[in-house]
Length: 383
Image (cartoon, rainbow, N blue to C red; front, side, top):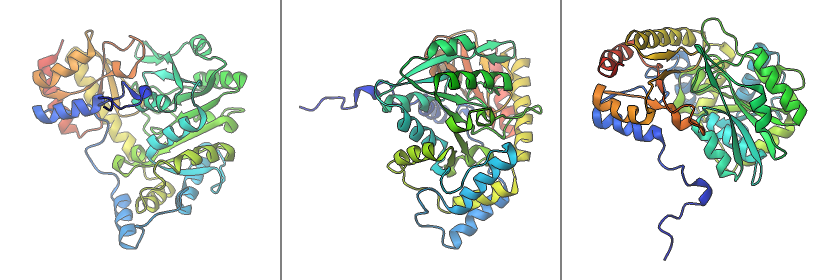
């Protein structure tokens, strides 16, 4: 008789995600879903029109495995214009099925059984699953709240690294805290990576969604880091087309080759008509207005939550704001749809430690009228 649960041991504990659970609860209770991080408006009209034109003009079959040349050229141009990083479009740029596939491919390429990957907690949930899928182990360094922001202890990062560590997985701007790692913090990470001869996998999908004049700094721009960094970007977040699943990797050729070796056996290619559209958008640089609108939405939600008495940590970037509800976050989020008709995500699911047990993540990448209605409903759950 086969086992009742045939799932491989290392993937036990990665069943139905909290996102699926809370989204289903949102539907059952007719709640406003501030849990999942996707906008409720479309991206720029010219971007959408370019995709339609690509469909009509025959871009509907398999593209090249590494991505169409126009998109790889646009990605390389983007890195050069914004960060003065030069990548060869033939050997140092790889198009992926969203940033999630890029992350999975990089982790699986560089870390296997017996290896370790250092992450900053709270962490995007796919990080833990991909590390486990490869048979490696994660070591978490906690981002600790510091006033209205977040910090990490460099000594804790150093202590998390062992002879088995293969890579540091960095996410800046950071989901779910909205933290933008500053130059001093990145220098600390870089120094440790150089001293310990580690790779850095840098998830930078929110690079253009920073607020209050902050500037994103890719860690690959720091001395000695280009040759040991895999940088990951995404059209989904940059252009508000999360369902298109167009991501990319830029890195030295030897690292891209390793990532591509894994990637080609996951989803070999994707998004044929979306690739030329994203190439045009990257070349045009049509993303500035999105961050400005998001900042207004952030302020609407954060100000409203604070007025209701919630302890809010105002984010520096991304789609998300963190609230300390000062009680069990999972219990709070499971009750919230029934009490107030709003769905949020308990940040505790993004931690290995207990540091996030009272923290809740709200997504503000929704229309202002939706956020205003959510705030009206949240009066029922105010402290």
